[in-house]
Amino acid sequence: MKLLAQLIISALAVVIASFLFKGVEVDSVFTAILVAAVLAVLNALIKPILVILTIPITIVTLGLFLLVINAAMILLASKIVPGFHVDGFWTAFFFSIILTLINSVFNALGNQERNS
Image (tube, rainbow, N blue to C red; front, side, top):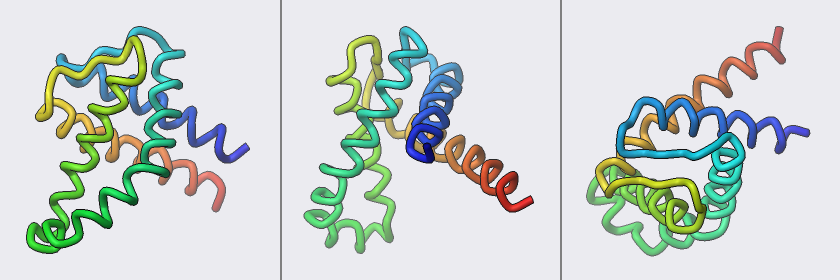
């Protein structure tokens, strides 16, 4: 149940973030759910490998290179999911930041409700 709730929250974050950026297009709500699911799989399988391989550059940039990895995951998701289009790297970069912020807000609100 928690996985489904997280997937819906992430899909909602994708929809909201796509409204904030002109270079990101999401065709439907189902596409947003599919994007959230693909991003979850990519973040679980591919991102850890990339993080390990890029430890030296991540240390030199004080962790900022992780934002580049997040943008790469979004660009990869746009290649995989039909109906989800991102214009370029910088759009994906800022989209990933906004997506992370929106997800954090929704998760914090969810945790507040459970703790009350």
